[in-house]
Amino acid sequence: MCERSNHLIMSESENCQITYCTCCEHFSFVYNNCCASFDLKKLVGLRKAIESLEDIDFLYDFLNRPTAIIRGKNETMGICLRQEDIDPVLRALYETETLHEAHKIINSP
Ligand SMILES: [Zn+2]
Image (tube, rainbow, N blue to C red; front, side):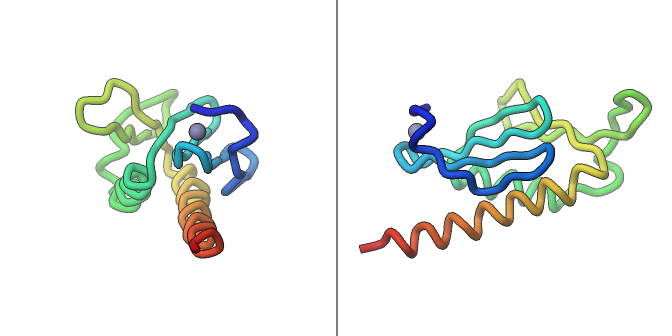
């Protein structure tokens, strides 16, 4: 993780911010009180995992609301999402991927 000055804001909304570090090329994903760091491959993986969620995946009863937990293989921490989190998080991830593509094109030699 580098100093804050290398971070571009890729997406920002009420509960969610995704930044991109131009130095180490990592994405920082902050949603409510959860924070995770990904490379592009894992960011796309997260988006695909969220897209493939079905009703049956919301099997955790967290404060009386069905919650899905997305966790990578061999990882002890995960991201908890309720149904109403899906749209805003997917929007933020798509926004980030699109902006990252644009950033690559603009900065290619
Ligand atoms: Zn960095």
